[in-house]
Amino acid sequence: MKGNKKNYTCEECGYRSTKWLGKCPTCGSWNSFDEEGETVEPASKAGPSVLRRQSKTLPAERQALRYSELTIPEYMRTSTGMGELDRVLGGGLVTGSVVLLAGEPGIGKSTLLTQICGSIGSGGKRILYVSGEESRSQLKLRAQRIGLGDVDMYVLTECDIGGIISEAERIKPDIIIVDSIQAVYSDAVSSAPGSVSQVRETAMLLIETAKSNDISVIIVGHVNKEGGIAGPKVLEHMVDCVLYFEGDRHSSYRIIRAQKNRFGSVSEIGVFEMEESGLCEIPNPSEMLMADRPKGASGNCAVSIMEGTRPLLAEIQALAAPTTFPSPRRTADGVDYNRLCLILAVLEKRLGLKFSTTDVYMNVVGGLRIDETAIDLGMALALISSYRDLVVPEDLVCIGEIGLSGECRAVSDITPRVNEAVKLGFRTIVLPSRNVKKLAAIDGVRIVPVSSIYSMLSTKGILIKRSDENTGTPNT
Image (cartoon, rainbow, N blue to C red; front, side, top):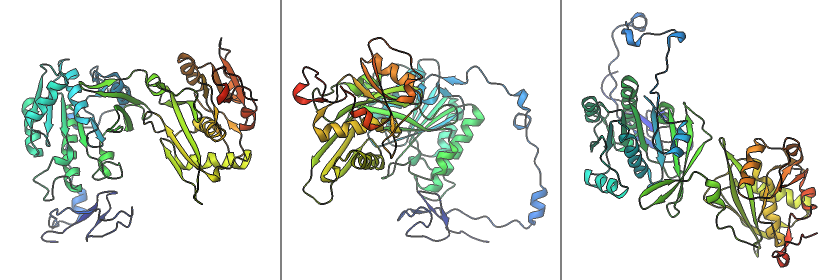
């Protein structure tokens, strides 16, 4: 084959085609095909059988080693100076690893990386900060705002990957930060920066540099309209760790979670608060999430969740209001919408509560997104509390999963959940009956075992009347 052949790749799923398509046949996205424009080299005159017989002798440092000969150096992990980020990374930044950090515009990615430079640079590590979207003056302004001192950091405002790697070979840094990969390009690829082929080519060169020189690389990635990482999906497969920086720009709280981590768990989260001087760690997120709880208001219930090895307490709010429309509205923020519909169906079928005549709104305070089913019991109690206009006691927390028959099923990690609740002052804990058998008695704490939503509602003190909220008189 001679000359050039245009290839088109879907930016969402990486599907390749020899012609432009309006709709991707694989993922169904529209207008997602981007031209690669790569040059197709002429086929070799030698036949494929001759090419298969060719061999190459690798240098000694690249040859295969026995498993018993492999060693782990002492400098394998480097602390970022932020305990919450180290928790998500699995203990620190691994030498020679490539981390992809993605998040919405303005969420604080560059601020976080600048603070990391201050912590790591003051520990004797050399850093090369590559910015393709900001000038040196803008970087200096942000560094002064967050109080960055004199550290061993080099700033490079360059988008050509060849120039970036050349400077890395000259400076010999321990850590390279690239902000962002969508702004970097390679002369070997004719397409525009940020395209599928450019992102794939430049990322591969950065990964090769990291692995061959034991340099840790942090890459910033843009996100698309759906919230996923822009560019080819293969980018997430190429890197060692994928971190998502989440939060509302209008709220001060930020959450970092790992979607992929070759050197640690993907269940941990790190919680931060954005202040004028930068991001501040929140070592006890439960206190933050439970602060400012309304007193004597219906539709509120505390639940216990697990984020990796860390137990957290969160507040679920529900509002059931009469509707005048034939199709009632259902809104879920922070919980799975389908799970909300399931709980509503169980309550309507098993308890006879007519939620079909009410609009239902459910929210998790603090911007958390909860996926586990251990909050089912808390969701149900918050919905019943709002529907009946009864109050859940402030010192009560619910833990448990609800089945379609209304039964309450056991959940995992019950001991750390209960300990976290007791530490924050909760004195009434509603648990599935099977979980209670594994717990020891706790002084001053009332453990309420429930086998179904019927037994929960028949227990005194679970719901109290609004008129009796000051005296705490149970509703019978």
